[in-house]
Length: 113
Length: 111
Image (cartoon, rainbow over all chains, first blue to last red; front, top):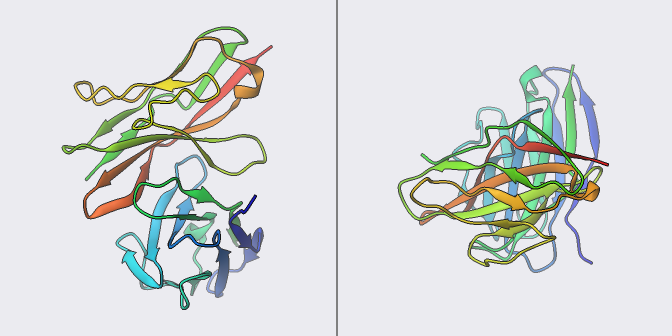
């Protein structure tokens, strides 16, 4: 069964360093989401793509976070510079669009020291 | 803005007992409501959605627009139901596909 892939699974970085996460959605899924999940809270949407276009990035801290999906397939989320408060699980999800079921990846757990 | 509240962080029941996980939402429109579940060492996955009106793994959830609630229920809990449960809302319209999650409830079913 097709699954959403994410890498790395774990990342430890020092404050002020740059970090990048990668997501490969299920083939054919036009919509891709990046969520941040702080320990003890539910996932919070950071950015939503429809193909290669950003649909919603209202919760993305644009001074330090960037996301791209250049060919409308896989996606990269970058943080530069990382701050202590960025420590969280970063989840990627994909769907066929609309209110279709979202399929989640395993996540990348980021620890900023 | 929409909001989803799950008042119980932890819920413990014994096997065979009924279980209800509460979810309340605030939104002035007609939302789509979902329950997502994360079992130990597994990915977050869809459990059920209100528009399908299905019973999945014995769970049901009814959307009560008057009380703005979407509680998840199961008459007889099983140990394998132990997991983290998230209620989520899709406001539709310009927010179509954008999910707002609650904080989650950890359900533990004791033998």
